[in-house]
Length: 186
Image 1 (tube, helix red, strand yellow):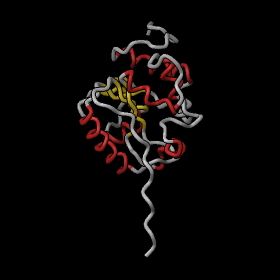
Image 2 (cartoon, rainbow, N blue to C red):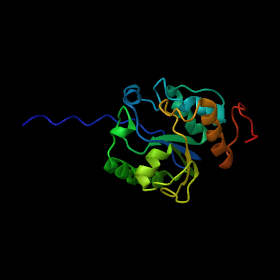
Image 3 (tube, rainbow, N blue to C red):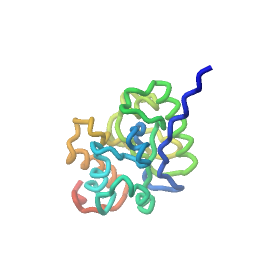
């Protein structure tokens, strides 16, 4: 009998009890898992978007992700299995990942989830018509806001527009502008 494939390595969550906002990606990329840090790929615009939107006082590197906890923020994903593209995930993985996410979120009780992109949210939570912005149904007790996916593959949102959408969410949930790059005029 052939040996079973070893289980895929998991990217550690950046989570703690009672956070203000948890950023929820679709699933980690292989490069992020290999490096051990979220949004580690060069083409991902997550860290610049956080900074420009005022979530962080300076541009962070992926290796500094745990600094978010001190500002009341965290990071996780819907599906924990790494892939090169989200299209490699099955519908069943999305649904199971959504259930797992709801359980993890209920255990730590954050106020908000910032879902990074509509695609993963729609697939995991059976909401085919979901759009950017606040959502009517909580997940694990947390309110939900969908922002654009910061992946470099998401050409619909250039960096300035991506940061503006992130800033809209930051202002709506009452978090301070830590960078001052875009200002509070949103």
